[in-house]
Length: 103
Image (cartoon, rainbow, N blue to C red; front, side, top):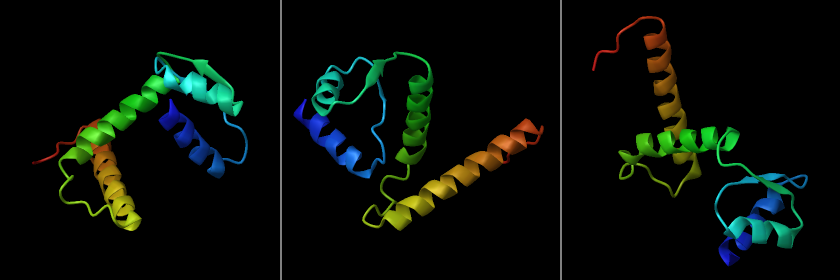
């Protein structure tokens, strides 16, 4: 619970307004959110689930690059993420137009 409280305090420093947080089954967030006076609502499926699926995909796709990404420079991380996104979009668009990706 202390980690959640610390994390949320850091997040609030960069927020312009008080955000409304969506939580699922993690019992540590409601306590921390109440302590900070933030609104939240519980949602197991829906928009939050879609976002988590997207991050899961991103993690799976970047896992193979783990040893090749220099995380000491945020610019390297941003460039790698942009390259992965570009490749994904090209492949998706080509397939949707009936094209074939040669590997």
